[in-house]
Image (tube, rainbow, N blue to C red; front, side, top):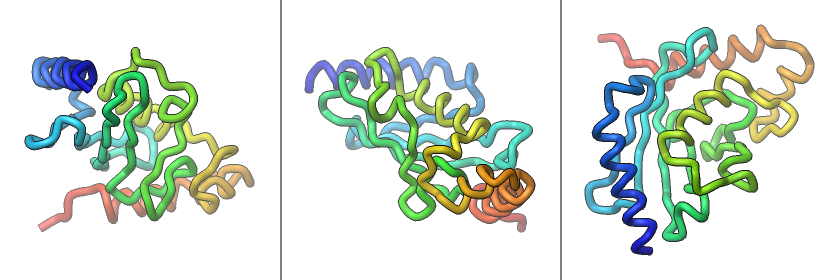
Length: 157
């Protein structure tokens, strides 16, 4: 547990130092628990998520970095690899392809990449996956844009 705390403190200091380096990601550590983090990621440009800010919850195991963090979307998102109700994310690096070389920041980067390049063949959201697999890209993008506007964009006055 000491090693994981040391690693998380190191990552915390790097995040503080590099805040301006990656404007698409804001990582915040829970003040009372180093194993709980929140991230705010910007939807990638030229995707239906552009303009949205999505909140992620990180639950870091005591065996970190030997085991991956559990990450889920708190912001509703229409995406084939994200469970619509729970926010669970289907991403290989969060499961069997994890490496201790990954950091919480690089996990956020991978999630942004997944948002831009969905994998409809392993869907957690079957409605979204089916739209893409059937070739209805327009329908998928329309739904994704609608949910981005409803859940991930600031409400206007």
